[in-house]
Image: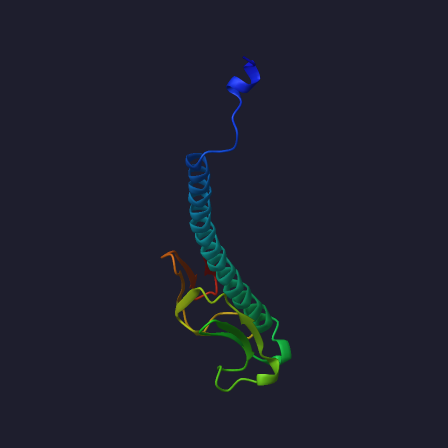
Length: 150
């Protein structure tokens, strides 16, 4: 008898196909969970960087007395606005700069900060909290001297 015919195998068994498909499904499911958590962490970091950046920009504009005015930041929903004026309500709307945050984060805490001309000191102190859907939170704290801790 021919040795090649004795040990040759024709096709693939149903069990081998089921094991392969199951393994691929398991890897895909695990990868989706890891990717989703990575995406939420990334959105949280983007939101934090955006808010910190707008606070620093408004503070610089106030310190340099740009347009001889105070500047501030207003956070509403998933929009952060740099504005010129004493408050968001009485602002000069032509100078607004809007920045959008990812929809997967929730912003809480203080929502309006105005910086004094020349000194750059904020009108109030407190914390802005960024919460992601996976439970991760980030805090941005502003001190009486305008120092940001995040």
